[in-house]
Length: 333
Ligand SMILES: [Zn+2]
Image 1 (cartoon, protein in one colour):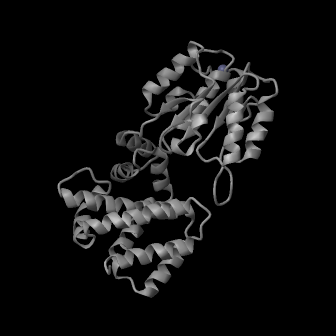
Image 2: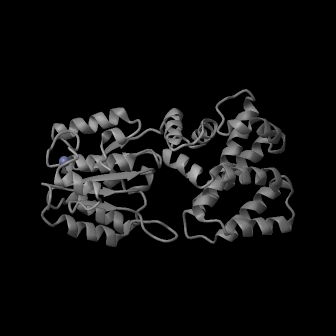
């Protein structure tokens, strides 16, 4: 399939600016695309790379030159893509940066330049970040760098200052609905998922493919029961959750976070339509009296700490057990 700018949903101003920079030959040496996951930053990076590498050199890839064909087949020798790697904790490591450095030191094969895309550049260990900084400071050959990240705070300020920052907004619900409907989802389901996706098409597709609505239903049933858990319930639930894969577990915790958020919103205004779980509004109003406002705040804090721990190499079972005990004991304190 031949990728081009029209494959990107939304982000019209950003695309126009990037096209203008390429046609005027003013593309900065390093760009950083910032925004939540799953909204097209990486795709935009790929199409920009294809445009820069295209032998026809306009503001969009021609789609038919050898360079464009090579990008489409994922075999372009002058395009280097770095992504986080690892079984439990996904990180970009110094070996990957070293390999990229030696790769871009060679003369380009198909184009007159090289392009490096670094996906999730905020997931980099210290050695890798320093290696990248060195590469940006002393460019080798004619290379362009396109970095993507969801959290610029996790990046070295010295790297940030060397990149032109481009901020990508979350997608509109209607855009996500049409993506889902184009994949055959019926309208009401597409609407619910779009609402839950937080503006991320990636998240919406995960919800759809990973049976996210079932995961949310599980989280809701946990919410309604946890305050009356026995010690044995705690043990059993921690055990069950520890067997879930990290990504799905993180999603499950995220749903709990959103329930508590919605409960706080409803506490202030029952008619608020700005709910994440709008379809569960009546049930959440019931939950409001159980999760008194201060408990909901505290619970959301605990959940945020769990999310943080899930990103590290932590013992999941112990983490989940401690989390559930803290929640259960909220009402007893
Ligand atoms: Zn081309």
